[in-house]
Image (cartoon, rainbow, N blue to C red; front, side, top):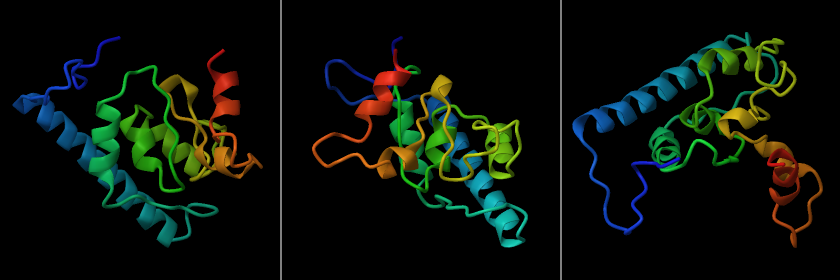
Length: 148
């Protein structure tokens, strides 16, 4: 699958007005999502913990715009924006945050463990904390099973 953001000749990519507006809309959507998470969490309506990525929207959107649909990403504990920029649905993300079975991990992952291999979103926190040693990149084991 070709991606218009990737230029094989390593030349600067020029984006037209529609492409720039699309990227901007994604950033605004991510900001609105995160502000809603902060509001709900602040009112103790979201169980557990929630780490938002306000101020990092451009990074998530810019990086994910340069990826192919079948590329995989992993993020940090502040990865809601990356998940959304890679194609995750806000309704399923909110379901996950609320612990609902309709969430990406059936409500068991919460804020830090949202994963959806169909959109290329890997469970980031578990990749880091499951006892992988420094000689083995954290994503190698899980990626091997997901991509089979």
